[in-house]
Image 1 (tube, chains in turn red, blue):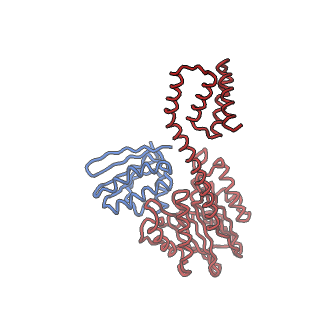
Image 2 (cartoon, chains in turn red, blue; image 1 turned 135 degrees about the horizontal axis):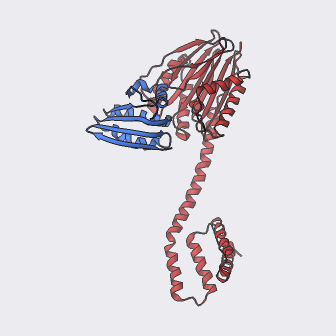
Image 3 (tube, chains in turn green, cyan; image 1 turned 180 degrees about the vertical axis):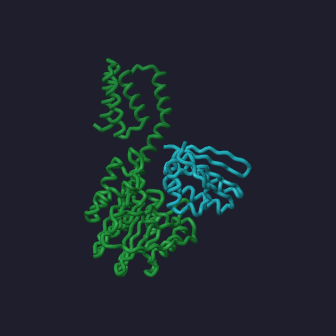
Length: 335
Length: 110
């Protein structure tokens, strides 16, 4: 017996039971039967033709008008049949797209993965978690000579366009000559690349810094990025790490201001994306002071544990549903 | 979360009054209304943001797009009435330096 014969038989049973007793239970079974029909990919007009076949067998002396009316119904159902098949094919396409996005997301992770370098003077912690499959935050560490370069960027918009844009940033950064690793010059260069290549309502915010272990100087510059924090161990105080500048991609001739400061033993440089400060809880937005006090709670731990603990707390406060990509980096001077 | 846009026109001046939130969901709606206005040469587009209590970076992107369009098409774009929260993100991103923003910020919505 084919699957279709089995369905016909089952439909005939249900229908004849219902016509005899007209119980709610049989009606309910009819409803459940429609799920089985969907599973077997029976289209709406197939069901009508099944109904005709069963009615023919149950009532061989059905009036001609009745019989003809079913044929008419069958024709009238054709449009629904098309809609049903279109739905099927869209579902297939959607599955295909989803699996392609899956592949792209894992490719992005491999491409953009930035190893956290081993650095004698600095204890480094990083957490970067995407809100959706693809991460619109970007961070990058490069050891160049004895210095450490660190960048955090946020591409406006989320998902695939942001991720593609980020790959562009990565390759633009990789191809800049080493002497242009001064943060403000690097931003000026990237700004020109971005301005030429992005859609008019996209832009990128970025913070770039270079730590020079000989002088313990931290050189930095910012392009409209959410300010991080500096922890000054000597005074036991947190300050905003302000680096003013226009976001990348708005105006080709933008220049950036160079900033620098001395990092003492025990000081921390804290970099973040706006996913950290734009955390929305049931009580409203998280204030920057709350982030500082979270960091303070854990600041005696190694840097990686600090960032992980802070992330976990903020994730919990948001009901474990990130609205925006989240990146938090801590550099702590050890010696 | 929603965005209401009301629009008035006097000669070349188009005034948009926004209220609600400008985020990834409502930004396309704002773009659809605002961008064509900035594409008309000589037009003055004034956007009142006093009813906006939240704007995310996608919303900011719409204003960046409108700014570029007004420069390319010789129109002008003015923003006014930002609440503190909205003003902060225009400041952080450096956009206050390149945009025409009327000072005299109103406080949080009445």
